[in-house]
Length: 147
Image (cartoon, rainbow, N blue to C red; front, side, top):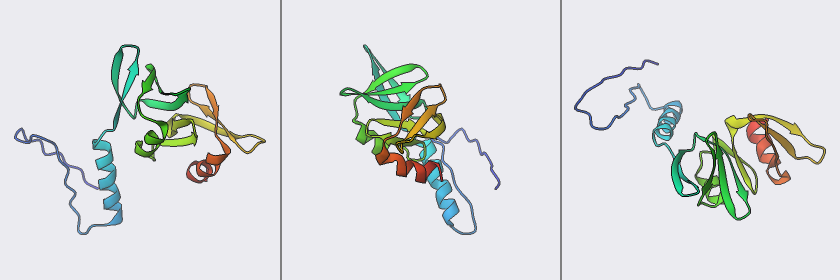
């Protein structure tokens, strides 16, 4: 595939055009991926009296803490005002996976899995923290990540 950049000062907003002999499923997927990358999903995190706009690429882990939803980033923890089930629907499914009713993890943040005697998976994260999947989500995890 050939990639060219045509820089024009008259262009107000960048755009991408794909030239091909015919439209294929692979080109459709490429277009969808470009669209996903360029429409960067953000969330607003709250900590004490401050607000911070967080890219989903900054978020490593989202979990419930009592009635609060908290996301973990390299900059620390931020409270989110969305419910976990809403985040599970809106976050990109190729970047995040739900491991229990109370936790969503960025797939790239997972270091390894270990099967427990009870049928759950122990999830070891890149920062050394450990968490566990629920049996309810073990099948989905096995299908999406371990097959």
